[in-house]
Image 1 (cartoon, rainbow, N blue to C red):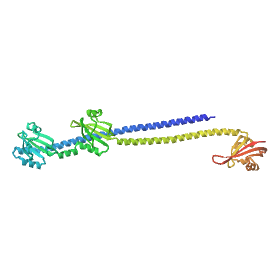
Image 2 (spheres, rainbow, N blue to C red; image 1 turned 90 degrees about the vertical axis):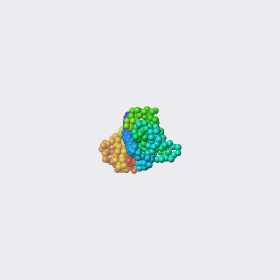
Image 3 (cartoon, rainbow, N blue to C red; image 1 turned 180 degrees about the vertical axis):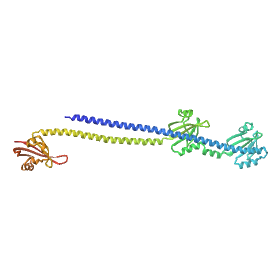
Image 4 (cartoon, helix red, strand yellow; image 1 turned 135 degrees about the vertical axis):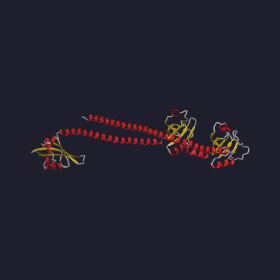
Length: 440
């Protein structure tokens, strides 16, 4: 029999199909993982480019902010020195007194105007304070010493805290004919407010506030944080960090991923200079949340793809197994049918199987010999054609499954022993099996 080779072929094919399926699944999942890794690198490259664009834009905006501050100070200096030159001309022509200075102060929105002799004693003032025990001298002669000693004719004193009224004053000084110092000051409150609104720190705060994906923006030197967005008070120092030191020393644009306040942050750094002077290290921390969300979506797609592949592969495998099993069963059935057919054809008794319409489905070799008719000649004939009407009635009407019958076949008397039984086929139809032995 060929059953064993067929089984071996079936299992070999099944094993090959399983190997092919798992190989394809491995290749597809590997490709998906590679694509995920490549997509992640592409996302980081895109984020690096965006960070570079952002930090360069901040550097340009910061540079412009510093230029605006310079221009504002120059405007203030120019206005104050113009008024100081007017007062100097009036003073040298003997047209200055306290009332004139007071009027000029009010008309030109100047907080205070003082004229000091080289010994520091005040000569004239736009404001007469009645403070007993307060000397009528400049509080710090060292500040005006370049004027008094002839080192310069103009001096920008800059921001100074007010002595009595609080706040800050912005002051300049101009030398008189005999080295007197004509000092003008304005209230610096509006200047400071304007600087706070358009200054570097305000720029960083506004940029971070308008974009939720920017965690922080800071300008830092080797000692401390010069300006920062939000509530940033502490950042990693430059000196202990190789990464920050490299950015500081080599003026390189760099990026890295760090943890900041339990958040994963993509940080970009670049050195910021103004007029060739190093101001500090510009640091921008970007949220990793967009990348994490994209990665999550990619993971979900990969999982979905894997599940779909598994489902399709499982159905395909089941289909192939079922089909191969069916083929195997058909081959086995063919073997069994051939084997049973050989048995039926080689038995000594005539075997005839008729369908519900009386047509003969099986007609073995013994039946051919008994009825002296070939199998191919019975096509289209009925079982009733083999016997006379009376003999057929005896066979069909008998309730006994075993019948002895004497009948004429081809004009010869035959003594037959007939066994009759029924069975249902695959279509649930009744078929009749006749086993006939010749007892003649």
